[in-house]
Length: 468
Image (cartoon, rainbow, N blue to C red; front, side, top):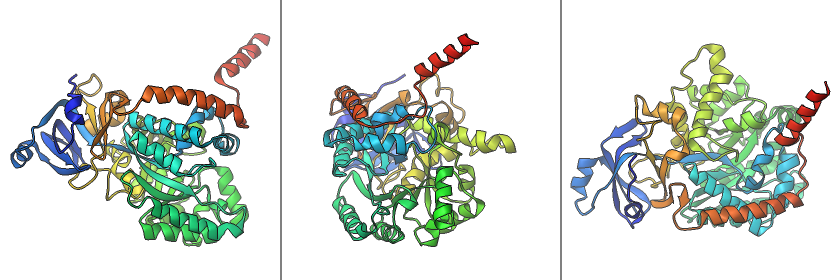
C-alpha cells in the first residue's frame, strides 16, 4: 500500500497529480493525470501529454491510487448530528419527537459545533459537498455556513421558508428568502438554497414564490416529499391530492425542486418528475432505518429522472451510501423481478457524485473530474486487499469500497483531509467538544423515543424469557 507525500499534496498550486488512474464519466482512465490550480481542474488528460504541456510542473506521483470525484450528499441535516443515534430503532416521522425538540435546544455555539461535527464526518466519508435542508435551530443560518467553511466542505445551504402556521408571514418569508439567496452569491464554498419542511408547511403562495426565486437564482428548493404514509394521508385529507401532485397543481415542480426521499411514488408521479425535470434525493439508508418504503431509483434512472444520493444525516460514508443504494434496489425490486444487475454498479457510483451535483444545482460546478470544474476529489488507495485484484473497478468501489481507503480529500483544490484527519484544524478536539455539547443539548430537549435503547431492550427481552 503506497502512501504519497502529504507535503507535496498540501503545497500551493498549481499541481500536476499523476495517479494510477482517474475516474471519468466513462470509467477509469489508466495513466491519466490532472493539473489543479485556482481551485479548479485546469487540465485533465493522458499523463505524458500533461507533462509535455506543463514542463514547469513537477509531477506528484501517486502510485496505487485512484483519483475520483468527491461524493455529493444530496440530503443532510447538519445541525442534527448530536441526535443521529437517537434514530436507531425508531418509526417514521421522528422529526416531531426527536429533531424538532433537539434542534430547538441548540444555541449558536452548539449549532455551530453540531454542524461542523457533521461536516467532519462527511469529509471523512469522502463527501466534498453536502446539501443541508435547513435548520430548525433558532440561530442565524450563517452559523451553519461558518461551520461548513471552517471545516472545508462545500455546502448547499437551505433556509427554511415555512409559513403555513401564519399566512400573514408570507411577505416577510419571501423577503428573507431573497436576502438569503443574495447573501452567498460570491461565496466559494457556500451555495444558497431555499427549503420547506413538507409541502403542507408552507402556503401555496410561498411554495410558488420560493420556486420562482430559486429558478431565477439558479438555486434549488429542498422539500421533503412523499416520504411517509402519514404525510401522504395528510395531503390527501387537506388537498385531495398527494404531496407531489399538490406541488404540480400549484406550479412548484421543475428543475429548481429537489424532492427529498420521494419513496412513495405512483406511476403518474414518476411521469410528473420526468416531464418537469424535477430532481430527487434518493436516501436508501434513511429508508432502512426509519422509512415506509424505498424510492424506485432504478425506475427513475431508466426514465431519465434526475437524482442524487443522500444520507439524511444517518452516516457519513460515501462508499457505504452507494452500496446501500444498490442493495436497497436489489431487495425492494431486483429480487422479485430477477434483476441481478440492478444498475450494474456504475449507476449508483455516478449518482453519488455527478448525478448528485446536478440534483443539488451544482452540476456545472462540481461532481466530475473535468477541465474547468471545481477540484473536489478523492485519492483512494486501490492497492488494498479489497480493491487490488480488480476486474471491474466501478462495481468494486460500490460493493467493496469504504472510507478507510480514502487517503486524501480535496475541496476547491485544497487538501482538506489526510488519512481521516483535517489538515488545518483540530478534528479530535472538535469531537471532544461536541460530546460535551451533545449531552447538554439532549438533556435540555424534550426528546421522546418510541422504543428503549438496545441495552434496555435486551434486558426486557431477557426478563420476559426468564419469566416463561
